[in-house]
Length: 147
Image (cartoon, rainbow, N blue to C red; front, side):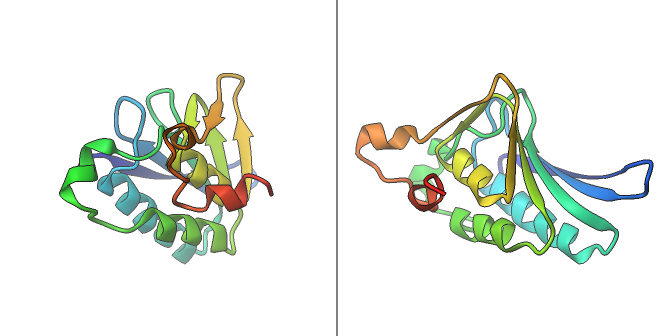
């Protein structure tokens, strides 16, 4: 599978531990099957780890996530659905924060909106560009944006 999510635990001086989930699928971290599977797997791992008090989702390569991986459209969906991945983040009993730098578009914005909080750098750009093609956001964006 193309793309991955790196998992790391960071502990502060006061002993609080945060799980860091970093989407990595160059150049702009599209939501390939590997990225979705990594988010799913590592979210479950962070929730099962009693030492982890919060989860931070971010992106490598100077981007949060540019949305769907269109190179996978013709081959059929593999791995967990984006709806299930976002539902797991949103339902987390532990706080989930999206650390957004660079682009957060389409499904990438929907991932960020599924987190409990969002922090954005001055370089962050967010949007649902699929609506310009007459396509509705497919992972809850139309419901979460107004919130």
